[in-house]
Amino acid sequence: MKKKHNPVLLRFTLLFSLAWMLLPLKADAASITSLSPTRPGSAYRVSMDCDLDGDNSIEKLGVYYTQKDYYTDNIYLSVNGNNALVLDVSGKWCYAPKVNVVNSDNGNACIQIICHTDNDYTAFNQLFRYDSISNTFSLLLELHSGITKACQEVSKATSNGFIVKNRYQPCEIGWTSWNYTYVWTDGVPILQSTKNAVAGSIFKKNKFTTDKKITFYKTPGGKKKAFTIKRGKKVTLKYMSLTPKYMYAGFKYGKKIGWLRIDRDYGKVYKWDKKKNKSRGYFKNVAERLVG
Image (cartoon, rainbow, N blue to C red; front, side, top):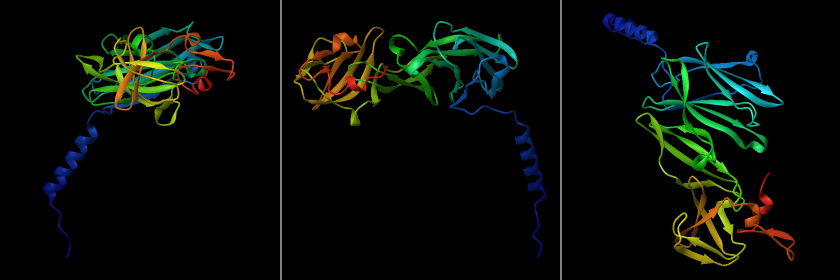
């Protein structure tokens, strides 16, 4: 027996499919898309379709850079074929830029322009907001000084903000990584806390062994002692905290958390031990792992 089809249902399905196909293209929410020109000059401009301002309409972003004496001189951004931003980064001694377009679910968006220099250190790192009416980009956030001195790339877009990876090498503890969480508030990304859990360090499970007697304090920059331990004791690096001037590391010893100011000058941290024929600082086997 031949199966009969419902003509009303077929017409509805066809009309729904056509309407869906005619809907305007929308950008993916909570996403990061990236552009990385690999050679200098306008002839090597790279471009992609993206939502630059969070309005669910698509713009075509173009990026290229110029070079002088092996380092990036200027960075050029265009939108839909029209020039929108020129950045002079001469004197930063940085290489080719990378551009990240960051979109959150709540309609907020920004772009990150980041450049690295020798030994993969960050030389330039800023966030910009795009204005479609004036076709211009304006500076939104500096991610390379003060409490943001360790900021790297935006690593994840969230429903109401984004996460920025931090990575830094204080001479007391070596390369350490942690994350910053930003939440959009009235169109501005606000850092949720300057105290953040450590994501990784130079030692397994973030275990450090003291190389001298050290006093730790109850709060970052505080004067009240949390505990004092002798050489040879193991502590666990748990937190990083930054102020506009200083950097602090939070260590766990037993059930207590104690803070230590770090990122001091190498000469103030390490002293030469003639008997051991090596430099000794706060923790064992860190000096040998420092890079650059």
